[in-house]
Length: 490
Image (cartoon, rainbow, N blue to C red):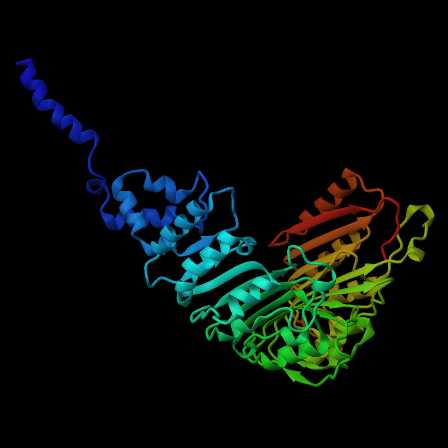
């Protein structure tokens, strides 16, 4: 009797403990769960805690779904190259890329490993046959490999490629002379054959010869040359050809010349550009550029200036640039850098810092529609200009501000007065066009860099309490910097 009961109950117990996965989760729901769990690219070789590997070990059904779903195998990252036998790595790449099917688009990040023998084998035998499906490609590559793989006798045809991020590095055994930007040393012409290319990022720290900048500029909507220095006339040429450009990042050198070419400036109009980020190297040597740009719909401008010696910091550069653009700019960031010479290391009396106020009144008059302004640490605003900001005569629509101060209390006072006046009703029309007739908008966010001497925790806490009392809707950030010897704030 007992044996009979056991024979009847054991199968029921086994069925209850170990059901089929499909009986609990229909495949549709299981796929939804896996969609949430499987994120990020496929790393080659995969780490031990790789999510795909762990999920495929749950059961055969999960493995079948993961391996047979091409969208889980569309992004590949070779950045975490580890000690691996070449044959094993090649077989992994071949297997994983095979799981992407024949239709899904591919995203590939190759890092610096494209230079190795196994890296080139994977590129030639695994990636090249699928180049017509690659929409994103990122790599760090030597000049020789760039020429051989992308622009040789059998160039790669990226028919759907939309985004490239290419860093051209020095040859592994190259000398200083071989790294100079000589014409023909960098061949980018292979990417001219990408009819869908829209986003291009180039990192060429050693510079690039103007004749080598061969990209389909007219179809690009975003260009990032922030780490690739170009001359002024090349910058203007790129803008002139980039009729679809919406977002641009450029590093412009005013000191390097190629083949004795003079900078020929002309009026350039960029019709759809919305965001522009400029790194200017020694711009004080030639100020004519800033009268050459017409960007009627520009909304965000970010300018960083690098000078050797004591920077002139006359601010006329920014005023001319903003005024000539004929734009209703809403967001401006200004960064000032200088490399001081030894004669500027002068001791200060009473260990107090030497402050040079920047004449920003002309800049502020040129952008009355500004809603956010961020000034890098070390750019100080005159007290009279702060007063006009508080009353709304300058920047009446300003809602976000990043600014520097020696003690910080002048900025707290300015924001307090501005926000207090924002509660007043409009004063009505004014007879003077120079004076705004409406109340200023309340500031909602403050990033305050306090740069002085002898700070202690009590001073910073008092400043934080005062900033908290302003009750800013987007909050505040206070960043104290103690200048120990009181020097070099120039």
